[in-house]
Length: 95
Image (cartoon, rainbow, N blue to C red):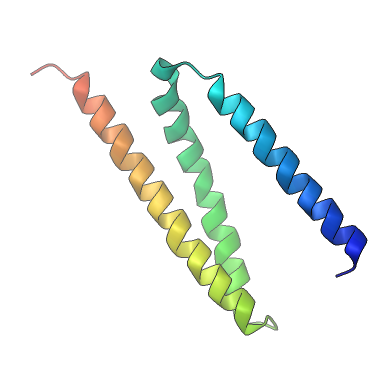
């Protein structure tokens, strides 16, 4: 990978991080949990990408290990997001 591509990737990472922080900071607390449950559903796409990164066809050992770590972390994110959403929805049910 050449230096120009690395600088471009770092630029995209910094810009995406800044925009994500600004968008999340402006969400009111009453909408935070429902929006996060929706974004956790989108995290399933991360799991698919991680599975592709961890497959065994021509990739290095580093990408396999990073793909496995990504699978674990994305799965924790999805399961935790659904657990939080379930707890939130239980608060609104009548006893």
